[in-house]
Image (cartoon, rainbow, N blue to C red; front, side, top):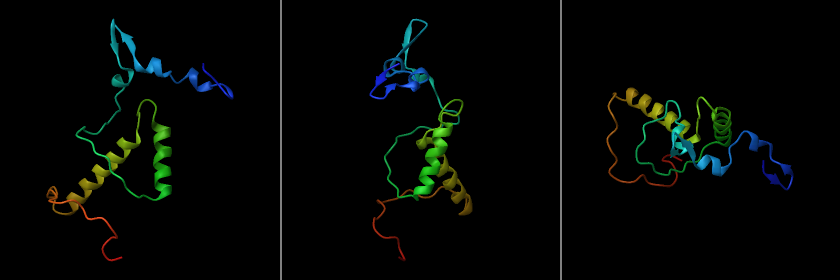
Length: 118
């Protein structure tokens, strides 16, 4: 347990320290603990990019609460996985509603600014 200004941190008993998390020996070889823990129902991995969206605060707080509640075993949910799964589900729904074919690739970047009609 580590000492803090407020005393002993009770989470040290259940959350491994950074040194313990970094490496763990399994049958004579070092294996990353994080590499062995795979989320269930993880979306397919591809090249990732950063995206910024403005969302209602109550929606973001509800998503964060769900991730905190479900971040441990067996789900190991992350905010990225939750958002990716929701976005893929909505895109699939939109494709089915508009002919069932994938949308054509975009030729240029989206224009910023106010939405059309506002």
